[in-house]
Image 1: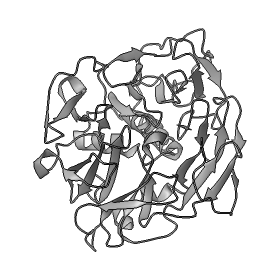
Image 2 (image 1 turned 90 degrees about the horizontal axis):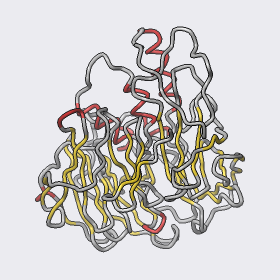
Image 3 (image 1 turned 180 degrees about the vertical axis):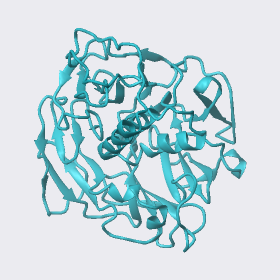
Image 4 (image 1 turned 30 degrees about the vertical axis):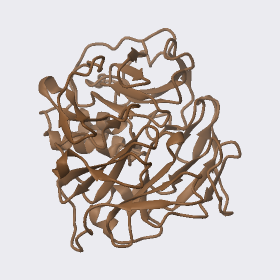
Length: 411
């Protein structure tokens, strides 16, 4: 949950003294796509909550006999999370699903997985026993990665990645491209306007060899992230061009060559943080790599662009006007339709569909769109596996096309 994925939303949803503004909800949801390691955030949130005494009692949470049971006694003074125990979910493909359960602030979290499309779930090993799922990414049907560790058997065993200084010419089959240090993404937005080679040094991970190597031919941008898109869509690196404009570099040959597109104006020299926390950045949504949508946050407004030729030519969406405030970057369906999610009635995210090649966005009925429980984490996101997931911390569902949904909640 991109990132993204439920961990960052759920570590903060416990602050339920009042419903946060949608701008804050949007910031949290959008942030999961570029901030992958949120365990430290969870610890800070926990300490604050315990100190403030904000926890309140809720009903018991049911569990399936197929899933390892939680401790029989909850530590004194603690109760289950009001938001629900499901704090993270990911999918290697339609058969291989993963979830992180965290019943209460001081309970030991659990990583679980399914090899049969969610019909049954079994306990897996977590390299971070106190908080499963935080930062974990599914990189293939049975390949998981987190914090310099990789599993190629669905989280049953983990091994350390080994740094290899020899540059890699391309990303190998089954491998991936990533930033070796995503921490600067948490810094002030002004950092993005100052080129720094160590901000996101791109590295190539080969899970079969358990190696992480620098990319030989890096794109011509100051990178700050790699877009979480399906492998078949190519490599999409997010950053700033030489003129400090938000940019996207795309590779169709595993990172050997790149094409770059820039959007908007240069970042103001005195840029220093904004309401949304994502200004002067660009985020990408694509399913097949041919039809793609980007949302550029510039001067506290979001602007959309659409490409139908794999990122070579881009045209403004929404008539060139700012997009409605939504969870970025939205999702692109297999037919090329772009769907935004806005805060609607009943504390739900509601879809806005791009029509006429995203010339406008309208609230049209989307048959089958998952109707989840109320809650700020009830939204739909696209995975690198090509699947779409939906969750509200208590319910989990997946879809291969964004229309036909299958509930796979661990029970």
